[in-house]
Image (cartoon, rainbow, N blue to C red; front, side, top):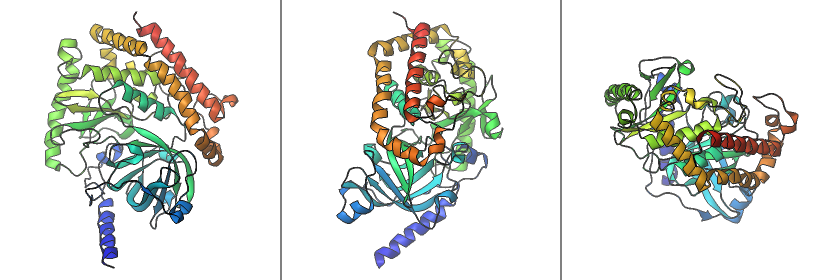
Length: 446
C-alpha cells in the first residue's frame, strides 16, 4: 500500500511539471513565447534499468512483431491523437528479443514537430523517468520517435545520421529502428534517435558558459528579441536555455555574450582563414557541409534544423539533424532544382556562401572529400543503403499495410513506378550514387 502511495505521489509531481513549457532543442517555437520551466522528468533513481527475461505472460502480452525491437507504450487517460506539446504520463515495455526486454518502465510523451506532426503517422518525444540506454545506446532520458511518413524508403534519416557519425568526432545523434505499438494500436516502423541536448552522454558542454543553437529562416517564427541575427540572409540563431539548469538572468547575460561572439565570428568570415579559424572549428564545418550538401536537403540551407554549438571557445557546426525529405524527394523552394543530383544547394546559405569562396576552405574541402573517397567511406555508404533495406524489409511491409496512403504521398512529380518501398530504395540509392559521382568531378583531387 505504501509503495502504491509513493508511485501516485511521484506521478503527481510529474504531471505538475509536465504542464510547464519545457525548453528543449527540437521545439524553437516554444522559446519564442518567453515561458520557462523545468525538465518534466524527475530523475528518482541512480541506476538505469537493465534487460531482463520476460515471464511467459509478459511475452504473450508483448510479442516481438518483426525482427526489429518492439516498443509498447501505454498512455494513462490519454488518447494518442490528443497528445499536444505538453508531456503526458504512461508506461512502456521495450522488447528486444523474443524473451527479453525492458518491462513496465515509466515515461512521459508529447507530440513534436509542426509540418511533420500534421501527417497521419506522427513523431513524438519521450522523457524517461531515469536515464536508460535504449537500443544499446548510452543512457539518457530523452528520446525522439521519428515517423518518416513522407519518406517511402524509411531510410533517409537513418543513413544520413550514420554517415554524419562516420565523419565527425563530435556528437551525432545515433539511432535504430523499432516497431511501435501505442495503447494496443500498431503505429508502424519508427526510427528512434538520441536527442540533441546538453548531456554527458550526448553534447557534453558546460551548461553555464557553452550552448547549443539552432539556425532557421526568419519566416518560420518571426523576429523577436531573443534571436541573434545572421548577416547576409533572412535567417537567425536561436539560443535555447538548457532545460531547468540556469536562471533567466543567467541566460540573458549569456545571450548578450553570444550575440557579441556571433557578430565577431561572422565578420571574421570576410577576412580569410587566419581570422575565421580563431572562431570556428573548421573541420566540423567541412564535415557538416559535406553531409548536408550531399543530401541536397532543403532545410540545410539555414531554413530549419541546422544546429551549431560553442565548445572550448569555438563554434562547431552540427549536430546534423532532420533528413526525411532530401535525396531528390523535395522540389520546393529556391535556389536550385533539388531533384537533380547535380548542383550545389547548401553553399547558398550565408556562412557557407562566404566559406566556399575562400581559397583555403575550398582546398581543405577538396582534401577532405578526397580522403573520404580514398578510404571507401562513400562506397560503404551505398552498401549501407542496401543492407539496411534488407534489415527493415519485414517491418516495412507491415508498416505499409497500415500506412498505404504514405506510398502515394509525394513532393516531386508523380512517378507511378516508385510507389513501392522497393522502388523508393532504388531511387535513393541511384540518386545518392549519382550525386557522389558529381562531387568527384568537383572535389576529388588525385
